[in-house]
Length: 294
Ligand code: NAP
Image (tube, rainbow, N blue to C red; front, side):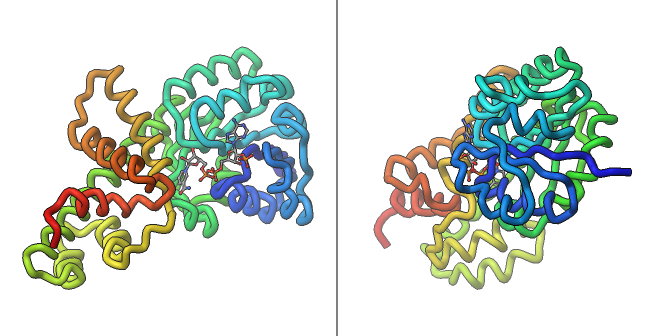
């Protein structure tokens, strides 16, 4: 069976290596990126460049979007020159950005009216996961739509979980962001507490990480806090976007999230101190500033 033709929109930190894997796996690939120059390397390797999301959609059966926020996905799908202007009936759009579940449901309605389908498929695993094709993919949409795009998603990630109807991939991803954020605050507090109470925090991590309080955040981000290595990784400005999406959805569904709200406020302090483009472990600096001088 011939491979589906893929359109890929958004070649940022995540999208560029992901589109590279799609091309390497042999899918005919058409690319669109707002900043055209970012497509050059993959065009050199055999992809075609399109002038608009509409043109990328017209040349594809499966269209992947990997842009920033809800308004950006709206723009590339439903804005002028967007996917809806070029898409052919029977095509499937896979939005892999982290955005609001509600926006996905609205876009699904617009696509259905054209005889097309949407799968929301946000990811976790960061830029390293994108480069190594080891992303965890959380998908929402009709089971048959997911089956259709699964061969493409399989070249991007190590796990693909069908979470339910359109929007539920985003809900799962936002749960992921609650967990990583609240856990990172706990890691930051434990490191500050260890230091102030005469325990080498590296010894604390070694003693604890194999037990019940062990976590990915403690093992991987704890040492970054100790090394004052705040290079992103995942930027504070981006986790704030995600926590805003979490808190908006929590507000509209009456789900109180006190710990997530607190982390959002602490990151606001980090942004106010000019640290928005640093990695999430810079959360520890907010606590250090609040503590008595050592
Ligand atoms: P990024 O490097 O900032 O790239 C964003 C991409 O979206 C760029 O290609 C940008 O085009 C394009 N874009 C943004 N707004 C647009 C608009 N209105 N119209 C057209 N194109 C637009 O971001 P990223 O790190 O790849 O993240 C992409 C998505 O993945 C986000 O939703 C993010 O939350 C999520 N995510 C990121 C990570 C991570 O570790 N970075 C991990 C998991 C999930 P230009 O090149 O022209 O700017």
